[in-house]
Image (cartoon, rainbow, N blue to C red; front, side, top):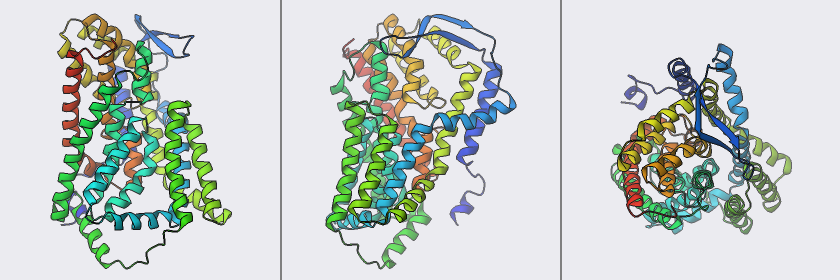
Length: 470
């Protein structure tokens, strides 16, 4: 039975259709949930717009969502996501130049020779490397490197799901632990008045725990499917992949000095981008510039024809266009929620509901609320601006210190960025990796449930040890 026949009963909707359905849900909610808003003021010291949790009022919806509003939200979502989209297009273009030059293939062949008998170690190393990228704030910024890691893992004889999980789960657990992730940890701590990146040791311990859980889960699946390819979630494709590998006759690319330097340049891009984001306050424009510089560097180092390299750059960027649109469409959901003014009323109702409950129950409910809210508002920093001004005062009322409330927020935010279908970053990664969303959910759902359980246990531990500063 073919893969197509197996799914005859239900075909998972295309990501664009899923976003349209969620947008329709927002319209339905706009007729059910009364519109309202908190007073907002700009902090003169930070320039950040903050919510005044003491002033809330229900209002008449200023501009009900109309027929054209629904579709113009798609355009506006892409425009408002332009910084992320452009960075990904630049990265994809530059990396495609590297790929077409043969440097990546030569490097993979060399790595595979070295990895003989050490395949599991390579998976562990890649998982750890991507988790480090995630913990310094590489969300969408880590996506262009997923196909590179996948080529290595699949080259060692593992299936596409194992290859995708090795990199993507690494980004997920790193971003969630958020040791030095400004987008969740940094923004949240600044809102509630904590020193930036305080509680670092606790977050590093959490990262190690997440890595161990993920490593065991992924290796267990990898070993099972390598021993019996029929147990692979993508069994049909995996068997074909193995057969093609056996039949393949290729001339091994020479790992020349210029190619080695080109790959070292890629490492420099990673390290430089991380340093710039953490120490120099770089955003997407600067990261785009780094990839543009890298593309020029490749042309010079590998002695490529500039015109041909320019065409290659455009082709590489074009490969990412469908997934870039998915990121913009994800933003469209938030645009409609803002227009309907239904976010603040939901938060206001939550704060009233939890004001008289115990601390553990409150922590659990808040954890689940952040997880659920992430379905609609994927942006870590944007969601922090909405929720932390409520969670901070609520923690003070209930005797839960501010550091614990930040941990609740970041742990509730991170994992589902790589599970919810409204995550533009996830859909971009799936598109680049040619992985079906339903297959990814089938593999990752149990893992993310385990990780969420571990995360909540860590939240309770943080509460009872009085994780500081308070």
